[in-house]
Length: 239
Ligand SMILES: Nc1ncnc2c1ncn2[C@@H]1O[C@H](COP(=O)(O)OP(=O)(O)O)[C@@H](O)[C@H]1O
Ligand SMILES: [Mg+2]
Image (cartoon, rainbow, N blue to C red; front, side, top):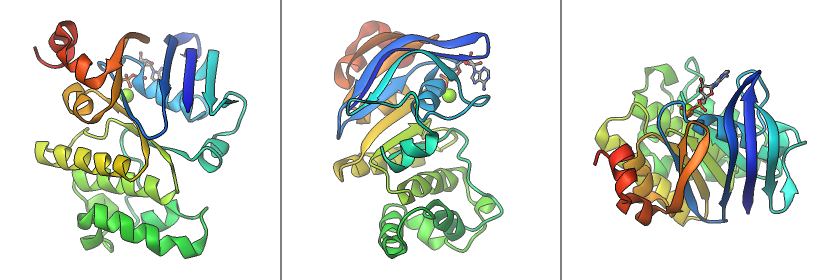
């Protein structure tokens, strides 16, 4: 469904991604793992076609979605037509708005009559958000803010969800809960691309994975196989 071939991405003169290739099939969970600075977020921002300076310029290669190039299209087309949505690192929710207002804002492009159905789904996935619907978002815990960020993405009627470090800042129990929910979303038909420094957690839920190291893919395969690989165990899974 999504095929990335020989992708190069740079910020000004500095190249952050040096010719990577990977693919994601419909219904899969694919993870990109790697250390801080490996180019994981850069890759997601390139896929979403976000503009510089926060996002990179794609300086080579191709991104195809169902055979169509994403290279010369506007970011809103990626969301509206290709139904890809990014949950960015750092969450990007509106702290001065309530949980409910954040979810309403995220749904502004979709038909009004579909709103309450989506809201119900999100509240059943994340009951804590339902309890806190009228609470200001900046008073939520880190874990609840991460749930809200995922909830916002689901409000946007997406079929491919890109998650940048969904485990970041979460206590261990909430991490497990978050990944269980992601697995459930996948079982309901959502395709997931998960970028993680927490390789163990990501490989446990993913079908396939790619290991990024300083802008290059150094290993790829079934998540199960990557987890068994001695070099990957040593470098990313704590031996
Ligand atoms: N907006 C930016 N401007 C300039 N350089 C950036 C920017 N974002 C990231 N970089 C650089 O690109 C490289 C890859 O970063 P990033 O994709 O954020 O890595 P990761 O998400 O794997 O931690 C790093 O060297 C980082 O310093
Ligand atoms: Mg990152």
